[in-house]
Amino acid sequence: AQSVAQPEDQVNVAEGNPLTVKCTYSVSGNPYLFWYVQYPNRGLQFLLKYITGDNLVKGSYGFEAEFNKSQTSFHLKKPSALVSDSALYFCASNTNAGKSTFGDGTTLTVKP
Amino acid sequence: DTAVSQTPKYLVTQMGNDKSIKCEQNLGHDTMYWYKQDSKKFLKIMFSYNNKELIINETVPNRFSPKSPDKAHLNLHINSLELGDSAVYFCASSDDLLYEQYFGPGTRLTVT
Image 1: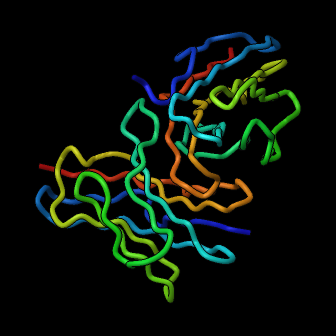
Image 2: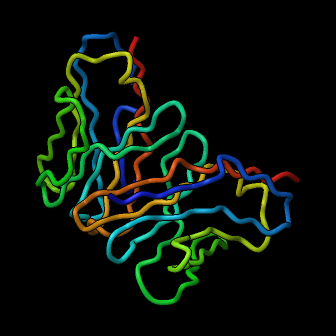
Image 3: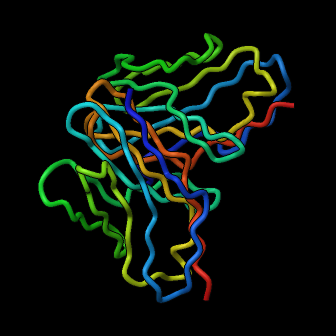
């Protein structure tokens, strides 16, 4: 069975500092991995994905993620955090059977 | 134009009632989903539809019945509502089972 884990419920960073939101996965076959962001009282928004190719993928709003097959990780990163990045972040994986699995979410708080 | 829309945005009803939530996407996608987000913000897939065919039914009670009249619409009907059904329900769509999903704004269901 596939699973996605986000080991941190909460990440706090100061504005201007780099941020990392962690995700590890367990899937059979090739992983299709995604990051989504949810702002309060809104639906989830797609940020970026890894399907194949370069291990470093770039997405919206200056976010990027690094796929690491040996560590089965797909951490979300941003070089310089903004207060407006404060939100709930979800890591997810898909299978071609239509099953999408989401992590429990990590609340990112960026303080001025 | 809203890519994925849901109606209603809020739904307050009493236990035992039957209610429906509608979802429409104008992205031309073949795949649509229903998710439930509970009070702790955990997100769980309920159903996946591909080309109007039910692909995934994730141990959801029979009181929940999705219906897809065409590829652009996926409605959710809930019979005999229970207190535990209170949650935010999200509709989503994607171009393919493996690709990123686009979420609607959510329907906040409160059962009293």
